[in-house]
Image (cartoon, rainbow, N blue to C red; front, side, top):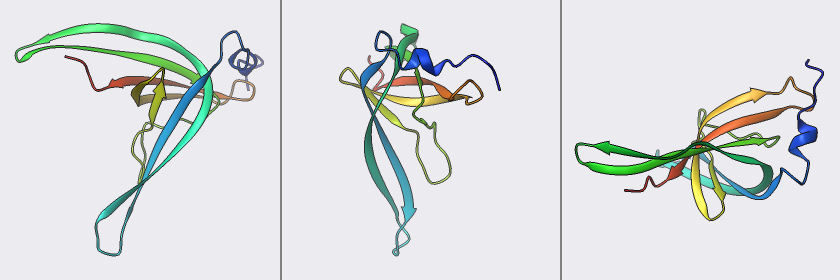
Amino acid sequence: MADLDVTEILFDPDFMDTGLVCQRATQVVGDDGMAVNTTSSTPFAGVVTSDAGDVLERIASGERVKGSITIHTVFPLSDGDAGQTADVVTWRGRNYTVTNVNDYLHFGAGFVCATCEPIPLAG
């Protein structure tokens, strides 16, 4: 285990944003053989920073703005797994899909670093 406990900084009120909400959907197969999603919403705190920022992408059919944010948190965000879709995070009134999660559980109390893409892509 590393000696540096990064979670001390994650809980510092100067960095931490408490206005995050995780919407997590799990999927089960019902008695009729059809998939049924169950969604739960959980507020959590984390440090939100710009990842790629807003990037204009020009393609043959037009253009769109894409970008991403990074969230460092002790809350176990997920980019999807068996029976579970990727988490959707709401921050400052916008929804973001968790597209990548890096696990840093070996740093002190542990945390994750998640890359999140906006929903929908604008353009």
